[in-house]
Length: 103
Image (tube, rainbow, N blue to C red; front, side):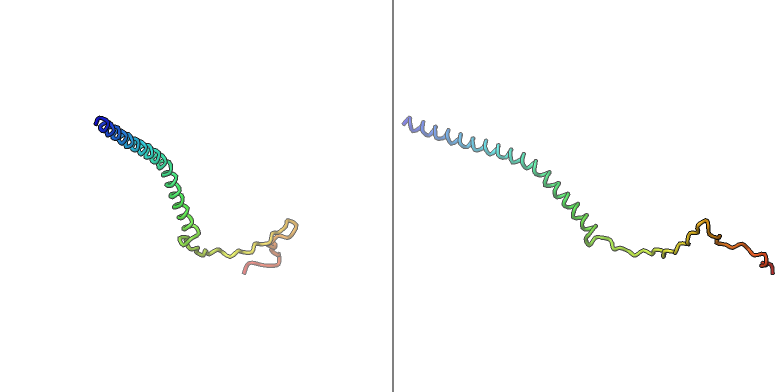
């Protein structure tokens, strides 16, 4: 009969050791998963933020959010006066002595 009690005690010890080992492994896996998640989360967050910025930029630059171009009134280009070289006669003629400006 002594061996039956010893067998049961040995079996219970094995079961407790197995359950303890399973809890230790679970704890280690959870720690590794938390470390991995803490490394991945900022990268995913950054990708989401950059995607949102890129989408808004595309929407407002090239998409339907782009402001409609308004026509602007530009003055008609005037024809420039021909440049007069120094060798030509002056643009305003000198008054003639025969002409009178008095009434």
